[in-house]
Length: 141
Image (cartoon, rainbow, N blue to C red; front, side, top):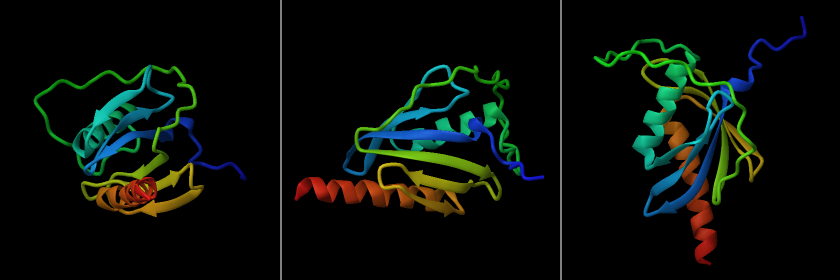
């Protein structure tokens, strides 16, 4: 009875931010279900790669299906990546639900040892951005 139903190592994706220039972040996504990290440049590519990863894992299931002419992709491999850290910031992202055409879950800023829940992708991006802007202002002083 004391088991946690939501414990699953595939649920967490580590987002490593390596560069943040003029509001554009560059980094990598790692997940135990990925054979190698996924590189991204910019918020749009981050969101598209993350959505594809969630679709490939089939978890969490989306409230609505995105329609496409492309065939369905095969699920990712099962290798476990090494512990990754971003040059600027590292976030542990846990998406619990995909409802109302958005994501809900929690994000943990590993270097700052802080965790916050988010109710939408916009809120997630604002949380991550506040950390990156804070780091940028510390570098300039």
